[in-house]
Image 1 (cartoon, helix red, strand yellow):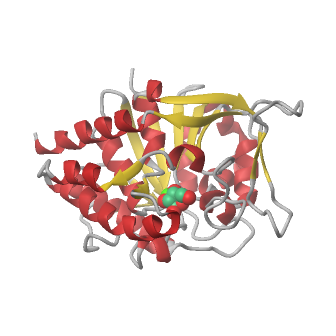
Image 2 (cartoon, rainbow, N blue to C red):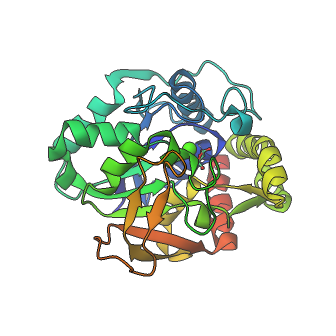
Length: 314
Ligand code: BDR
Ligand code: CA
């Protein structure tokens, strides 16, 4: 049976590809809704970008909601230097036809979960955890409804990408992340340790481009832009395709390997704010709250992505 999912995102080119991958995979994923949050770029742009991806994919019916514009207790930090001023540089931003739903994303998440059966909904956050942390904080009765949370954020062996010890999504709203990691529901975490293994090399982007359909063309154009900052930063042969690891895991978990660990969030230190402390070697007796994904079959990941993007030409 398909997982019922809500994708909570801040598009962002890699969030955009996550939406395409999910929309292309109805056998495995029942995409109930898309909620957006301020992150890579401000909320006015992330909600618009999510709707534009629905337009490009021809799915004008997927409900898209705007949520929190700023973290729970801090000002928003954005990432235009990576994603460009629209968040989806590489393609032209347009005024999308897919409507914005009037309800606030946090209210939508709460209402949808309260109406659902226990253990029935998978939350897929690929941006700062503000909407999810706020929903849990406001209505803890949603917790039993969550089957699991499959999120992109954090880092262990790779270190941070925004500060020496913190990954962007966790750093932007560490208090929200702390709520999520303490919530008691199963978490599968795609941090930089795994996303840095799925590089969008020229060869892979060319394979996507060669599919020749509008979604593949948009993906190739966005990834070509996304590449420039990270290839220089990491001197790698392509940018890490962080966020689609979440949805790829739900479609084909056998591509990934993980270990059940405690992950705790640093919310106090100025130096290491937003650090994800992963107890990989079980040196504490803290609860093993997270399936910490540490490796992926990168070729298998891109084969899956390309096979699914090809479906938009059918
Ligand atoms: C994460 O931060 C954003 O820049 C990406 O969209 C991804 O979710 C990687 O650190
Ligand atoms: Ca993101």
